[in-house]
Image 1 (cartoon, rainbow, N blue to C red):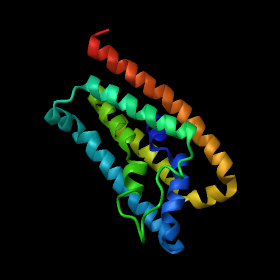
Image 2: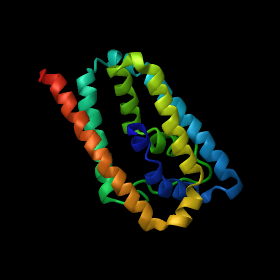
Image 3: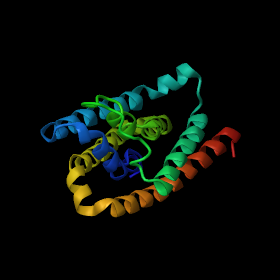
Length: 188
């Protein structure tokens, strides 16, 4: 559930629609699929190499938890109090590649932090984390593949309401990450 929330497919619907507006309708699905696979590759790299990146940069797990909690909280605040269509305006001409759809929309800072933390806290459960990531990615991918239809059916108001609800849930998760990081830092 955490991974699904941080991938934020519902909040990304308006962003994807805005960025893909200049792409021909017959290419949109292919672009979304390509960007989803790039995002999955980025998340998998950080899931399995993130621990070593932390060691290389001399970042403790508690520091990552605190930073991850803060980043998640900021993203949750944006989800709750602002429509995501204005967060990332479309300044692209042509077909996007990697940025902004794969990174940061799908594989954003919160998703990268979440997969690193999951593996850092419970590395023995790597198979469970991998399955959870793939399930969240598939569900998010399906939502984003049908983003145009979902946007037409629900309208902007319902999308914004669902995004705000997901933001509330994400804010609770972020506060828990922050509290856990502080407890680990000060051995509480």
